[in-house]
Length: 163
Image (cartoon, rainbow, N blue to C red; front, side, top):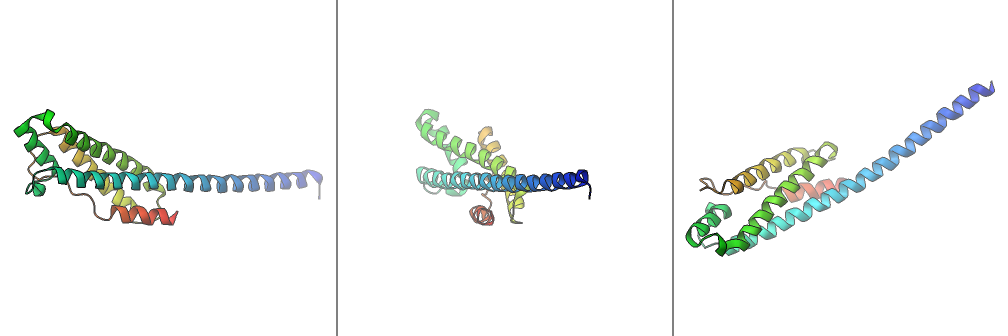
């Protein structure tokens, strides 16, 4: 065998080994990034649940069925916006959390390892968009708050476990 052919084979093997090592390192980094992204998503989801509980506790009894947004608008009409500044800040935080969470979920969706993740991410995006739109409109809402997609926490946990 000629020394040139041996050198080419060696170079080819070295290139394949380097490429394989690079792909393994990239996969490990993407798993790390995916875990961070999913943990951040879970934290935002938990924060929203806590805020929603606080908001429901702060509105008048009997108005829960109409939703937090409608109850807020009724309170503002009755007492004025300055009386409910803290409530407005919580509602704004929910809207920002929803938007951030939707972006994080849709960022992870193309590399998701569980089949339920992609459709659930799209449902959450639709929910976040509806919530943000209704919050920004600040008009009487006929249908109350949009419904949070069920099973979001479980879907995130399953995806985190699959990484």
